[in-house]
Every structure is written in structure tokens, then in C-alpha cells.
Amino acid sequence: MDSQQFADLELKTIISLAGMPVQKDLVNPRKPLEMAKKVRVTFRPLPRNYGNQIVIKFREKLKNKLEEHGVNVIPWDEAAEVSDGWISKVLKTRKVKRNIHAVVDVKRDYSLTRTFLSGIAERMYGYLRKPDMSVMEILRVSGWADDFTARYVQDPFNTQILTLMPLEPEFANQSTTYDRKIAIGIQNLIATMSEIIMGIAPDKFSLVNMNLSDSIYLNDGMDDFVLNSLIPKIYAPIKPPVLNRFKKGEYDPEESAFPQQLAELGRLIKSTNLYPRGSKFSEKVKRQSHKDVVEKIMEGRTGVSYGFIALAEAPVYEGKATITKSTWDKLKKVESVDDDMVRENKKGRWFVRTVIRGKEIYQQVPDMWITTSRSGSDKTNLDPSCDIVRIGVVKGKLHLETPRGVDLNRKDIRPSFDTYVILAQALASALYTPDLIKNGLPILHFHGYPDPNWFRKGEYHSGANNPSLPCGTVEAALLNYSAIYELANNNGKGMKMLCLVESDHGVNIMGLDKDHIIKRLTDGVDKGHVKLGGTYLPDLKKFSKKQAAEKLEQEADSAT
Image (cartoon, rainbow, N blue to C red; front, side):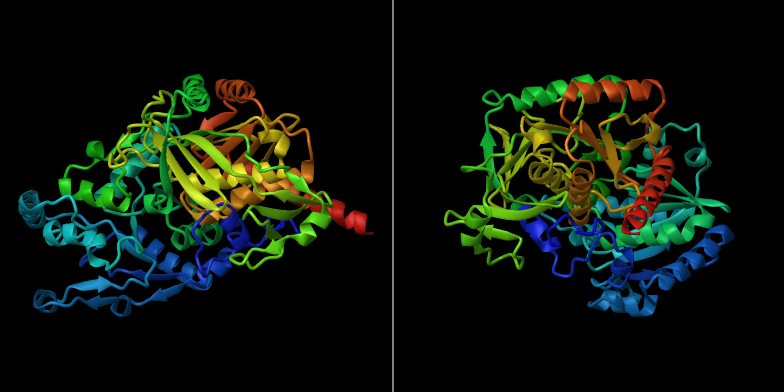
């Protein structure tokens, strides 16, 4: 099977196996041109007397590039309609329709009058505030005096705001630390109520979203940026896993060895400084109404943190892990999966037909459980009684277990944004690299990259040239799933450590031995071969392209 396809299973099959929600019109996440056809974007008119010519020229070029790649750019008057209600009609207040995926705007300065009115609106919100208010109700009460674009959209969960602003010199400075850049980025995201911020300079531009990337691009590379970075981000916005998709339960941290092992892993990784202190919205947002809007959109989360750490527990099978072809032939197809690669037995246990290095294998889809840090926690100082959750896929159904006695109504008890990615990694490892996960598998995700020369024998990386899909998306999970299959298919046994690269996000590192991983990362950081931020991402991309070209040459030589 072609390595550009997703392992040996169709997209919906993989999603079903990992218990992830199926999107009817899901496209192959390796094909951003296909994503572009499904994306609808509008540009909000510039403010009166807006004078930043650098931003204006970039805005026009961005619009043209989006159209060239097949994005449907809708005129503002068509995308935004006058709302119902006599006040809206008198004031001609427009609302962007729900079928628009993104609004591109510029950062707008507040006048003294608008600042004064916003203060009055916030005091009104303080009197009328209720815990169960929706985003739109909050904005109706508190946002009438503001000019941020979010108040002009019908559905803030579906329509992203992309704000253009001048590139801040401190952000562009190479000597500025990664965590300082992210602090600047988050401040701008929240101040403009945007999902994406782009800083514009004459020769370069930056992008920050809740992936916490510090990416800076040259204007000469705008074609590649729009196709492989921006379009995927608009097509697949960051969305945290929603609690009502999980079957909920509890576990006792004292009865399992994994919570203590995970806490110890966090303590060991602290010295690398790859997991800086996270940011609470209360520290970045002054207005209560803005805090409430952000927390509603983030499904109760009160802040952001850097990466995750997890321990995938050993796969759980009923009977033998593999079966014979004759047994396979007696199984029936799964009605919910339109694919003969998956069948089930009388007990409802699923089996898949996989092909690894030319050998056909019929194997059981195991139940998978992963002990992982909760969203927003300090990964280097985990308390097993309240900072660690278990997520799982049991017979294709999502499960979430929280420590016994912890109230799920607590805003900070939430599974990681990367939950679908973690589940896909664990499942792919069980199916394609069973030796790697048979005793459990440590997984570390941080927002940086290693130098391609850092890797040693038995250590492999993949994914650098994939489209930049955000965390929390099914598409990102599929790319990680596929990467593990490809690494297993190309390299066979003897893999000690895998590094799955996610552009504009970071890396997922997993391996046989957590002590080996910690030692390698510590050594890499000390010698400057592993860094937070995007320093080494271009090198990984170049290295991967070179590898791909060499492989094509070898295949061509073999064919002749």
C-alpha cells in the first residue's frame, strides 16, 4: 500500500477504531487543496482612515493567495447579514453567517469614547452575569460597546477570527525566549478575541494560535504557508474534546502503578525546561466577560499549558491477539464501518487485516487505556489525586476516568486538547509496533523540535512535511496514526524511540524506555540539539524532503 495513504485502513475506519467523532465530509488531511475547496472565508472591511500600508498590502496578497488555492472568499456584504431585531436594523448591525469558517480582520485601536463605553458595558455585565449564560448572551450584554470581530459572528464555535497586526519587534527578535514570545502571543489573542494572530512586517510575518507556536515565515514562502499551514488551520480549528462524548467513570490512583509512574516521569523531565509554566486566563484577561467567553469556548478550561505527558498502558485483549486467515474468513463485517479491513466476532470484538512489510496479519483491536496529565496541569509536578486522568477506547467507545472523589464540575478537570492524538498513537502502536507498547509506552509532547542530527540508531522521526493541523483535531490524530504505521512498515523491529513531528505545534516522543527518553532529551537540551520553539523545524523539513527524494530514487532503481 502507498505510504501516502493512511496505513491499510480507510479514514472512517481509523476514526471508528479510535472512537473519534466522524465528520461526514472529512478529507484526507495530507491534501490541503481538498481542504481549501471546503473553506469559506470573508474579510471584514478596514476601519475608516486605517493607515498601515504594510498590513494593507499583506491583507490583499493574502486574499489573492487564498483564492488561488481554491478557498471560497465571500464578500463581506454577502457573508454578514443584518441581524433580526429593531435595534440591529436601525444600527445596521451585521452578523457573519454560520457557514463562514473564518473572518480576517485587522487589530483596531480603541478610542477614548469606546474605552469609556466598554467600561459601562462591563459594569452592566457584572450585575447581570449568570453561570449558564451562552457566549452570545455574554456578548450581547457586555460586547455592544466593543469593536472586536467576535461579536459580529453568529456562531463563535464555528467561525474563527484571524487578526492581522504589525509584527512586534520583541516577538521577531531571535534572542527573545520561547515562553516570552508565547506570553506576547496569548496576550494578543485574548485582547482581540481571536483564534489566530498574524504579525506583519515588510519582509516576514508570524502566526500564533492556541497551539502555542512561535512560527515566523518569510514573505517569499507565502504560497507554501497559505497551502500547508493556514488553510489546514482554518479547515480544522482547535477544539477541545467535549466531555459528553465520553463514558465517565472513576479510578483509584492508589490501585494503579501508572499514576505514580507518570508523576515520576514529570519530575524527571522538569530539568529539561521543555515544560514551562502555563498561563491562566485570569492572568491575561482583565475583563470578567472576556474570561467567561474564553472559558465557554474552551469548554470550561481556565488556562493553557505546554504539552502533555502520558503512559499508554499495555493493550488489553480477549483471547489471542492474532488469528488465522480461516478464522478471519468466518467473521462478519462491521455494519457501522464500510470497509472489509474490519470484522467482528460474536462478542462484538473487532479484528483488522493489516499489511506490514508485505506480510498480511489478522489481529484483534485491543482495548486501550492511557494515563495522562489533565489539561492545564503542571506536567513537572503532577498530583496523582487530582492532576491525572485515564482516557480509553473500549470496543470503539470513548471512556474518561477521573481520580476517585474529584468533582467533574471542576473547571480544570478536563482531558488534554490532544486526546484524539494520544488515543490514535496508542492504538497504532498496539497494531503496528506491538513490541514498543507491550509493557506500556511513555509519550511526551512538548512545543519544540530536535535537530535532525540529534537522532541515533534505532531512533526515527516522521511528519515534518505534513500540513500544519492543530491539536484537538481528528485530522491531527490521523496523521500521527499514519506516521506510526509508516515508521513500522519502513524500519521493522529494533525501533527504540519514535518522534512524530507536528508543524507549528511540536513533537510527540515515545519509546521503549522512559529513562532512555529522559536521558536523550536531557542531553539534547544541554547540548542545544533540542529546543522549545520552531528553531529546528525548517531543518527537519529539509531532512525529510531529502529522505523522501532518496527513497524515490531507490524505488526507481529497483523498478529498473
